[in-house]
Length: 111
Image (tube, rainbow, N blue to C red; front, side, top):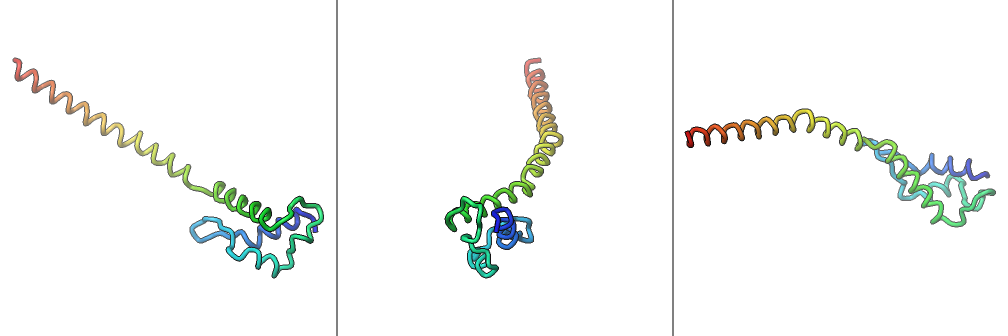
């Protein structure tokens, strides 16, 4: 079996997605691969020599999928827009009103 075909099948079998959208590697991934006749020694054109190297590839695939599907950047951008369009102007207005009140008090006290 060629590496491309092997790794495609392996990823399809052992990289799974939770209901919340997060990707994970099945804890018993080696057993799943063996039960589906995906023996690492059957790969003819691969540089992978051990299960540990295959695990690294699978873990990196999980990381890639989680990074691709992450909503974190969208949430950060939404929060930034919220703060700059609503909170920041309100804070500036509060500060302006406070300074105006202090100035009025100082004028009345000196005048």
